Image 1 (spheres, rainbow, N blue to C red):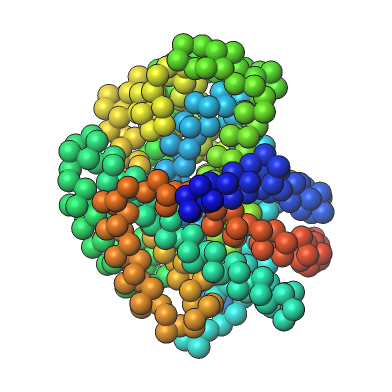
Image 2 (cartoon, rainbow, N blue to C red):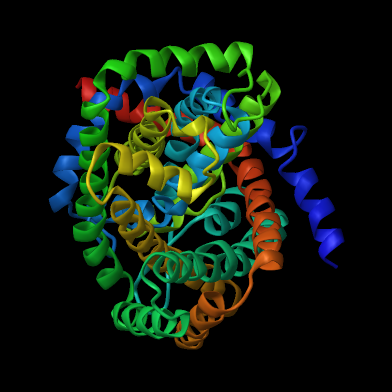
Length: 444
């Protein structure tokens, strides 16, 4: 069974399928939108600031909807994923992560526009949405099976990438650095997550609205502090990143060397895993936003990709390259720990705490995604049982070996993207129409 899933995973995330399909979809949407996401990037931050006190139908403010989405995307991938990409593909992988993020802004924008435009109201009066809803409401009954497929893959994928894998990362980090028993970590996580989940999306969003900006800014400030200590090497680091992206990276120290193909493959792969543009997860959070304008929420949503990859991942990557640890023997999270330890006291502690906080918020964000997918499949009666199972799964994730779970999670994540990308391409005309109408209204 494991061998079969490995074959499927390698195909889905190999160089000839999603690793090209996701950026191509982003490029297609960017062209159709006449580069609207990039042109309006600066204005998007002003819209986000106004979104702290948004009004309209919905459960949470526009700002907190973005924070909920970021709580799921800013995770261990921003630390371990970036280190893995550079460790295998060389510094040039970071450049291809940037390219993936810029194209992903168009994808994330279109996802949120569709999510708000086609959202539903459940029997409890709550606004619900996401790919399964914009497939059902936007493409019609003949495509309903595609929405069901997305909901199934999303519900199951959450227990992998959004639950057990995150709990395992926290338990491993705390045990490896401070010898905290994994059972103790599991029980603490279960209690904390349970306390938040019983409050529903509003409590998740309120916590995310406070915790995500705080932990993100703290991480960025610590990264900048490290870069200041090696300021003379930062220009050379940028030059190495750009040069390696187009010429490959020669063997150096403990680094075995990598060609352009590896830089592209791991840069795109880790970029997608980090910001999740195209996977269809984030629009589930944005569908709950208090807004009357799908386009304004789309403008806010696309900032998630920018913040996650262009800001947070760049900090990690620059610290790793500028400090020179990328060519050493440390790999994964140890590489990030070694890089931060070069510039600031207790840098390895900063990384450990970041992994814990990032993974905890990912547990919360993905719980909401999985819950909404389960609700689409089975109705509101499934919400309480789902939350119970979600909390129980944390114990398994923190205490068990997850090699096979990682593989299955990769497969399910990839399968989520396929229905979502089909829907985005077919609904791109609606996204363009709504965007043009919004621009006309702004001009008048």
